[in-house]
Structures are given as structure tokens and as C-alpha cells.
Image 1 (tube, rainbow, N blue to C red):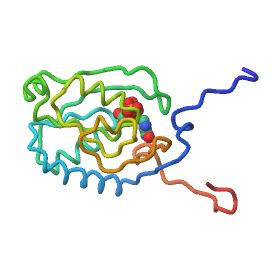
Image 2: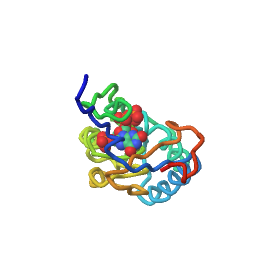
Image 3: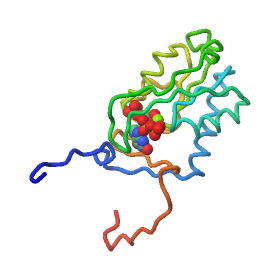
Length: 175
Ligand SMILES: O=P(O)(O)OC[C@H]1O[C@H](OP(=O)(O)OP(=O)(O)O)[C@H](O)[C@@H]1O
Ligand SMILES: O=c1[nH]c(=O)c2nc[nH]c2[nH]1
Ligand SMILES: [Mg+2]
């Protein structure tokens, strides 16, 4: 398609990279739990899949919560954000535990970026507590508790999306 400029992905627009190792992610999830421990107790954890599954497991383990539900939402196809699709809603059992409004429930996701995903889940559970490990400025007002803020033009690389690989030396042009 000669001459056309290809549309930049969200990752390309972001420009800066923030790679997170498993160790770092585990530490950040534990730090998040320290904060959440002051806010709870919670009847259940609601993980926003898929990115919320790993932090939800770590947070639930640390808080001693054994009821975990999912709300399954897809928006980014790799790095391009499309329309939000709710592939699975919150279960009736979890809804009941939260009295229909989410009171006493803890929603967990890996990050908020534009805040679109978080906004949708907040509408489903207006009284729930919403926690993410990382937050970008646009999504930050939606989150009750988070650990690290990164700039809007940063792309976070999670350990489950990456692998160790060779990096050429700086003087050979590595970023
Ligand atoms: O604040 P937003 O701009 O809505 O972006 C944040 C959401 O995007 C990512 O999920 P994604 O849709 O890529 O799906 P995944 O969790 O299955 O990777 C991330 O895990 C958040 O859920
Ligand atoms: O892996 C990811 N890193 C990000 O920074 C991001 N923002 C939205 N969705 C994302 N996924
Ligand atoms: Mg997600």
C-alpha cells in the first residue's frame, strides 16, 4: 500500500520502555498488598483478565482471600486498542458477596493506561475497591490503590509477555 504511513501502535506511540522482571513484579504486588491490608478485609478478589490474573493470585495469597472471580475484557490486540469487549461478566456468586454494588470486593488489574477498562469495571461494581500495580496519568484517577506511576508515553513490558534476549552493546547502536 505504497505511500501510506502505517498507523502507530500504542506501544510505538508510547516510545519509552519499562521492562518488569518476575522478581520486580512480585515485589511490587507485595507492596500493593501492604497498602490493601489497611483497607480490607475483602470478601473476594475480582481479577480483570488476563493481565489481572497474576497480581490477583499474589494479592489474594497475601491477604488470605480464597474467593476469586474474573471479569474477562479484551481491548488491546497486542498493542492496538480497539473496542472493549466483555467476554465474561462477574459471576452471580461474587455479585451477591458484594451486595450487588461491589461493597467489600477488591478488583485487581496489572495496570491502568487510558482508564477505559477500569471505567467499565467500576461501572459494574461502583462500591468495590480498585487496585492496580502500575498506573499511567490518564487512568490514575480511576484507581483507589496502586504502587508505581509511569508516564503516559511509557509502555510497560510484563514478564509473561517477554523473554531474556541478547542486547548489542550501546556503542553498536543499542538504545
Ligand atoms: O486503561 P486501558 O487503556 O483500558 O488499558 C489497560 C488494560 O489493557 C491491558 O489489557 P488488555 O486489553 O491488553 O488485555 P489482557 O489483559 O488480556 O492483556 C491491561 O491488562 C489492562 O487491563
Ligand atoms: O503490556 C502492556 N503494557 C502497557 O503499557 C499497556 N497499556 C495498555 N495495555 C498495556 N499492555
Ligand atoms: Mg488487561
